[in-house]
Image (cartoon, rainbow, N blue to C red; front, side, top):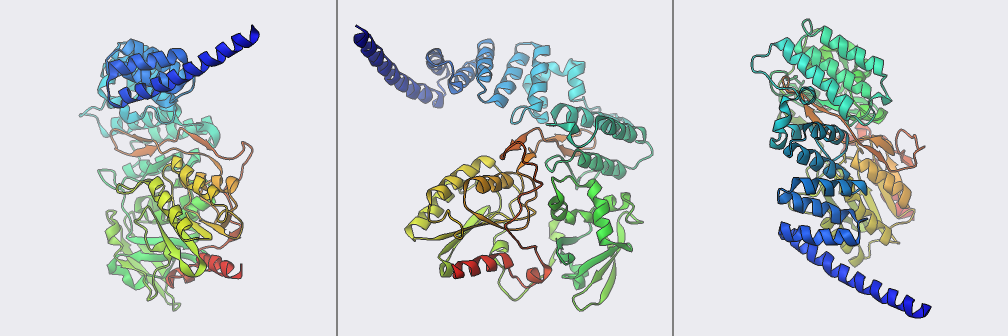
Length: 544
């Protein structure tokens, strides 16, 4: 009897599974075809069979919303949220549905949750039509104020600073992680108290300095380079090498000092300038200051930090390669990369790491070493090439041509999409001959940040790569998500990070991932179009 009952249960379970697979395929097809009424019925049945599957609940909610059945959709989104599926989007649509149903207080409650939740509600969403009915609420206007055409300068700045404060306190992942609440509030109060006596660029500088105190590289002020509050830029491109700060490009008018070392600005040693400028730079670690050294050319910020006597015309002292010192009075201009039209050059061909800066990703077969050099400059798909498809092509080439070694160069990669790391990791882990010490090198550096930082941590934990270059520009675990809020009167854009990326164990407090082999960028190598990092790797390949 027991055996018969067990057999009946097994048969019925198998039938149920087979029916469910058919139902899943049918439901997904209806959803893709945007047959919302039929899709909602199909996903409702699936959700009854398996209420633990967030995908069914979310697609049920969306199918109902597309039919303007906001009440039923609302409940389905809450069920999806209850199992933790698509948290950000669920919160967005719960807020939106409540707003459409006239549940203003409930909508506002979910808006506040969404602003704090990654990939959910952004400040720009508050302008959307579905939230129009909330604009008569004082609490909503406190989140996003109404802009008045007749506002005075003082009213505009005070409104912007109030929004800045509210947005940070609403959005940031952990606002008081690096700055105390008392210090935060005192800084806000000081800026507001002095709006009438401060110039616009002084207020911008103070906002940059306060934002930097929050202490993470994804939370920053985008320097305003257009509009009424634009800052000006001395037309000099700088890079901090181990020998000092050098001019890698400059406006044609001052071409005599391209390749020279910048030693002083208005008689202040450049090392002192770099230290002073740190107060206005948002970074994750000391490598971030090196990466952002070029920003010391923001003229008004230099002046407001008491480095220069005038705002837009300054004396610069350079040391040329022959030892000659040159002093030039240089005028700040509207920012435009085209101004850097005199570039340091060499008769030698550019090294691989500098040869394709505009390409998101590319690879080259180095025949002599039987190695693939793969450079990732930005961790996104290109308009004409999907990144996963690119990795498929690279590793198909590796397999077809019996490639033994891999050089992955992410020293110039400031980020992108961390979810693009998975296909690359999967390919590396499948390639047993590549994924072993001595055969796989990863080049990292000060610019390795955000999604590229996550890739570095993944590689450290899951592969047998050898890191070479400089320490990364961020840490294995970091606060990070670019999330812009535009201040309505000044038009200043501030990114306020609301996410925490933990790729390592919670007690991993390293400031960066350090290279196994440390090779600091040198001006000597740069001017001669050399790459000591790649030279080292290729020499090791020869020896092995």
